[in-house]
Image (cartoon, rainbow, N blue to C red):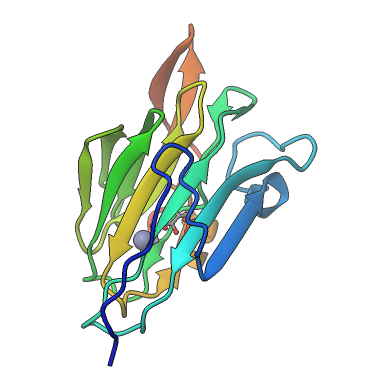
Amino acid sequence: MTVPFSRPIDTATGAIPTADVVLERRLSDLAHAFAETPDGDDVVYRVYNVDVPAAASDIPFGTTVLLPGKVGDEYFMTKGHFHEVRSRAEIYIGFSGEGLLLMATEDGRHAVEPIRPGVVNYVPGGWAHRSVNTGPEPLVFFAAYVGDAGHDYQTIDANGFPVRVVEREGEPAIVENAAFRPS
Ligand code: S6P
Ligand code: ZN
């Protein structure tokens, strides 16, 4: 049985000093995600996770720190995933920076919502999710999800997202992803 606990989060930097897991994703981990092939192997994002049991009765949570940058005209983004148990939902809360949350269903519907301080995003079951940093500062957000959700990265690796977020005349623009293949 999980006992009550609290963890401090630095909401400016996203750091969870007592995180159980800290993951770092580099350009090489996202090589096929961008339209262009990345140069170098910069860090794109870090994830700080607090472990609780992977059960439907628990709520794992953590922060993501997505750095500013672009590959060609495409903004830095996370790998993106479906939950293995498709019905499992998730919430995001923006802490600092500015970005977009791309969501997509397997048959190709998509939705785009802002991630910014003080805004909560609701990701319903069945919607893949990928965050994109469209600003000059790190994008920092909190995530919490149903514990038995699991993470399916393979479907996004194989199919991509229906849209990409690129810079056009200094502004973020949502464009169709020609490489997208619905399941
Ligand atoms: C987990 C939640 C986030 C992401 C993180 C990195 O369900 O959506 O914590 O894991 O933003 O993204 P990704 O797609 O590499 O897991
Ligand atoms: Zn998720």
